[in-house]
Image 1 (cartoon, rainbow, N blue to C red):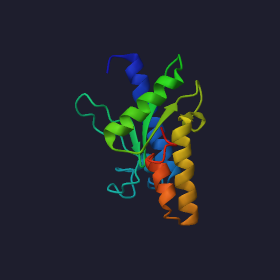
Image 2 (image 1 turned 135 degrees about the vertical axis):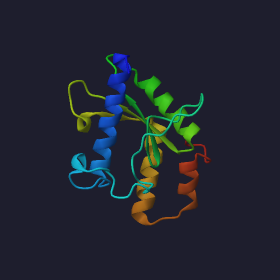
Image 3 (image 1 turned 90 degrees about the horizontal axis):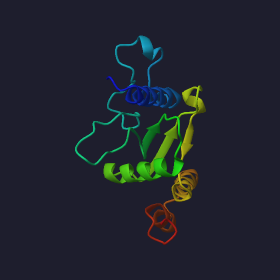
Image 4 (image 1 turned 30 degrees about the horizontal axis):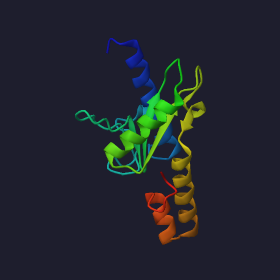
Length: 151
């Protein structure tokens, strides 16, 4: 890879993927020394880097139910990143898109997860439904955006 900006972006994607898989308990202990990092390589909860196919980008990482668009740029353009994350989530068939922005000279844990308010509302609904064990039709409409609140 000869492009320094692309190399930096790929390194950030890898750092985010490893951080999230470690935080979520998807990797085996001492995974850096292991032949294969995942406890179960077929677990749908693994944070993965999808293969890009065709003109419709499907995001940098998939962390079900999110598509993550990772950005490590000198000039930060949050609105552009969020739009791109949402578009790529749609392409990938995921309900939520979030931009993961690198904090300069900081670790992955200090990066920023950026989303619009509509996406944040969907996350709140999903969390509350999960906590309550709720299968509420109104909550389903909120998440799907069919009651007028979600754009």
